[in-house]
Length: 353
Ligand SMILES: NC(=O)c1ccc[n+]([C@@H]2O[C@H](COP(=O)([O-])OP(=O)(O)OC[C@H]3O[C@@H](n4cnc5c(N)ncnc54)[C@H](OP(=O)(O)O)[C@@H]3O)[C@@H](O)[C@H]2O)c1
Image (cartoon, rainbow, N blue to C red):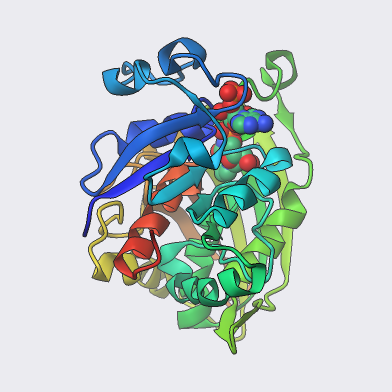
């Protein structure tokens, strides 16, 4: 792969920091430009409220945060966006019009019909949407998106359950970490000693985005998957790592052991292409009764934090149903990691620059 020069919108945020953490030693992507809102014009190390125990890499600590403007990213092949949704639509489109390839975490463009919503293990072929996007919009560049942090782990588990066993219905309950709400996020007095059984707009997003990602591409458009989904989202006092329980129904009887084998053996395009951020095995299945747990399993995978951990695989109310618990790191697999993996796939397939 060629050396890709990258810029980052929203560099000071919870997800932006994760990019800095992950791209510091990336073999092919070099993060060169940091952009922000209120922090523009300041040194990154002075502007950021750094959330990791390890120090900010020196070259970034000293870097000047630039304004979120295409001129700031001149010379870069790719622009990662970790902007809040409210400002993302306009700013990302400005970059796409100016000729940049944008990979965005924000929800602004996720459901646009000509914008791919990517999890490279699940829907690598959806990148083909980009072939028509520029012409239709009159952009020299393009926008690809990655899903809501809760969707990523879920869609990665549903994909093999649908393909290999014909899963027909999914009922999901989530226990979502605090970092999923950005910094400073949920007030401490609201969440300490508590569970909040509501996250605004989240349940609708989980079902809609999962169906688009699991959908099929035909004649240049995506037909969303029709799997019915019931979703309940909760915020819990965990720092990182979204836990979800999944109740899946099938058209015929399924053996829990066969489901375990299917999930543990799941591999896809990023593994075949040996992309640098692809975990060797995207789903890790644990056999212990008390796993997965956020503290123990959120960094699972040969690329830490990029594997989804599944446990407690067992039958449901009859043998046509399966229950399981899954866990994925929300700012790695659910955000920066999947966006970086998408950029690696785009680069390999000639969509960057
Ligand atoms: N947290 C997660 O687990 C997660 C997972 C998946 C997707 N996402 C999505 O990723 C995006 C970022 O989330 P986050 O949790 O990192 O948010 P965050 O902590 O609130 O950070 C927001 C970032 O955006 C910048 N920003 C705000 N307004 C701006 C403007 N007008 N122009 C330029 N930059 C501006 C801020 O820069 P300044 O500090 O300089 O103002 C900051 O760097 C959101 O769309 C979120 O929905 C988050």
